[in-house]
Length: 152
Image (cartoon, rainbow, N blue to C red; front, side):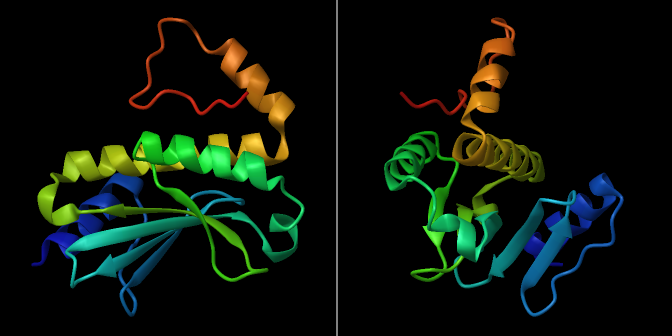
């Protein structure tokens, strides 16, 4: 069994959901607003994970400076990048995981980090006041794998 299939099988067991690659892609509905897509890139022995940040009509109304700054912070923390599917298409958070070089535990941890980054970026883009409250309420002793995403 290929590593990608093995890792997806283990992820399926962890989540308690039936998961499978269909034409190289697995979509996972984690809640009403988050659908995680895992594309199995066989040539690079990696997964390309993505999740929609803004629908086609929403992306154009966002401040491009905020998007670029968030993209910088995401890249600096190796949490992915903000990307557009087309000029006026939906906006995604995307990240490549080189699963051939990672243990299952590392892949699962990076997926958790990606999901948390998606939630924080979504808050920053659409509800900045709530994001500031989340940052202020975080206990000082809490040290995430990657520091929270903040902008000035």
